[in-house]
Length: 241
Image 1 (cartoon, rainbow, N blue to C red):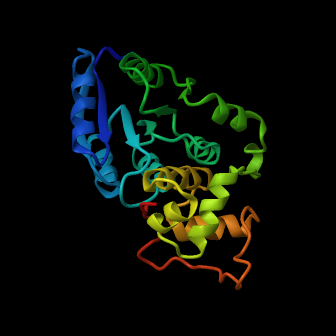
Image 2: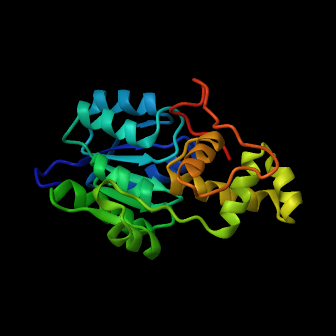
């Protein structure tokens, strides 16, 4: 039970129904947990939190709609007592830093064991000073010492990530990039996902713009690469690599 003796109420936010179903089964197996609602996008998430005021929100970082940082800000404004734990497949230090600054109380990779999840929910609900992180060692090291704090950031792309992003900047499709580099299309998508996370980007265009602005990639040598501007339909939405 929580410190008040009542069950810990939890909201589940993820756009994959099967994942939510599995998560609900894990949580409801605990007699001191109560799942009070589910949502699959940012708008539904905010409405759910406003309606239920849950003790803990488990929020997938890549739900459709507003980006995770804005969704966190909206939920905290509506229900400041709700403690938010991010669930993600990725743990890029820039994204992690932004979300911690926005006020999340935890960041867990989806590969965590069920007991780690249960412990995290109890910790953030019962200890107001507790921050729970289950991320890669590399992300944690960069969060601590690579200039992420204090408003400055230094993003590092691998050679392969730069290579793929430069080809994406030339408007090549994932399949064309894979053929050019003798990779599988799935590998190209995985590298682009990593780039999105590191740059805090929400689309290919956004990633290219941010990388060009930070001099992480070079414009196409054969012709100048224009500065791409996302249209209204891309802003605030996650786009598949």
